[in-house]
Length: 117
Image (cartoon, rainbow, N blue to C red; front, side, top):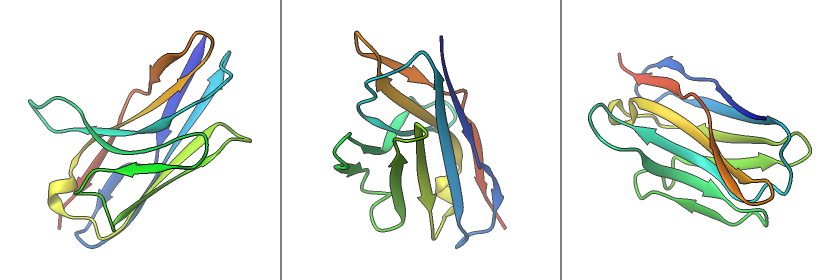
């Protein structure tokens, strides 16, 4: 069984920073792409950022220049450093991990980020 657990969400003022973490544990190997989606109320999840096994990254336009995704394959952890946060970044952030044999996608339970003064 595979567990994906996010942490690091919370309340932050506009212009502030948060660092989200996501750890995958259990019977998973061959981790490929990992990343983050976010979900606004009533809207389907949208991609924020992803990072491949070779370190290639992909960002949503809204995240470019403000968010940085990274991964530590020794601990099966992916991070999302979010700087210069705006109220419109308020959402539930979900981590996903693509891995295993055969490849499957595993999701975390989500972590709430609120940007408000």
